[in-house]
Length: 228
Length: 119
Image (cartoon, rainbow over all chains, first blue to last red):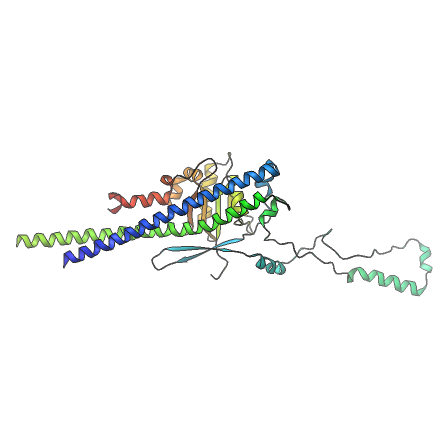
């Protein structure tokens, strides 16, 4: 009875160990992919810096308003393992959210409506104008309030970070961005794997302790038999 | 998948932060607090440690990416963090390639096969 229990426990321990090894192997593979992608990203960024200028790709270009385009969703599984999942805000969503944002009315080129200037009274002789002309002037005075300034709606707070560095950025900067996007995806996978490895470690520790206790119990039982 | 989801934070050199911000992880919240720290030559270890701890305390951060050479400076703080969320990922930097033997998680996993770990 004790022997079969011990065998069963050993088999389970082996199985857990193999699973853990597989996870570690996968983690190493993903790590290597992540490292090479980051390297590629830096290389592309350096190329972009070479063509744009040394100070044109730096922290100085970060926008004053930064909205995240990537979110991580976490889910705790039954065995306390945490799964990380990346969700990217799509451009379509951006436009929809852009409509809801309260726009701040700025002066200057944002207003596209044509305004008619109010003619000021040049001199006192105009007082003698006819009643008809006076009513016309009244109309012109009320007109500017009727002109609804069209505010550009395409000012998106969740704009592409690529635009921080200019409108016509080199292709290499776009390549760097795509590399880092892949790195972000991979980092979520690695975070999940790290969590799995940690859980497996705890599980293995517990199983090992249980096996040790079982071994002690079996050997004590065998000793009792021998003494009897 | 309901809800807004968490953020990814970065502590790294200028190129690492710029790269990840290009990828779209950056955020400046209502208190103008960023989810990234650009570590320059004159950035103190205390500042790095405080930022790391503030990221750990924030409920809206799911993953913290940190350059391994910076992680080495605050190793005690990283080793002390045992929770799964936020996950701490050590990444290479331009001057310092990734060394698996220094990684906190892999060192813990390595300990799995030592006799001391099972006591």
